[in-house]
Length: 183
Image (cartoon, rainbow, N blue to C red; front, side, top):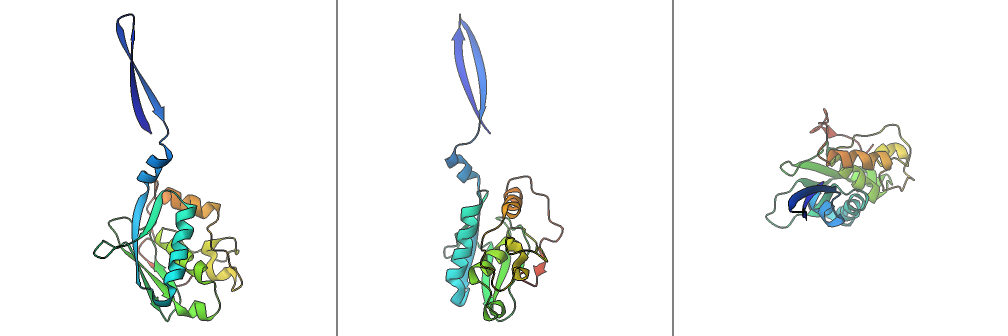
């Protein structure tokens, strides 16, 4: 909350009034946690990673994912490999680093590439797998089925990320563990 003080003079006596107001939209953006990502090792999945980043940047306001510039500290490193997609569970902080392995195995099996990226980035933001789960849950991952094309977090998933980066986060006991599935 922003604090504004106004002074008024009433019959020779000074009166101070404090008014609390909500931050403006611009101020809210300034309060967002900025995390950088490096997709230089994402190989053929760079566009899918960018789409996954866009999913999070359009669905939550307390955290912003920004592509790192050369020499800038990287919070989320994205690496393409031949295994199953997996990620270090966050929530990652600006002083921390996590890795997302964008595994080709799920792509070869027909899973939606943007869903894979946004799901794995969800782990970096502190969301665990929800298994089994419906397609409507981004964090259900593979249990949503190969035909599932939902790339967006549901209301509960968005709310959890908002809490994770809202200054009231409770440390996830599993933070820092590598999750072995997109599930």
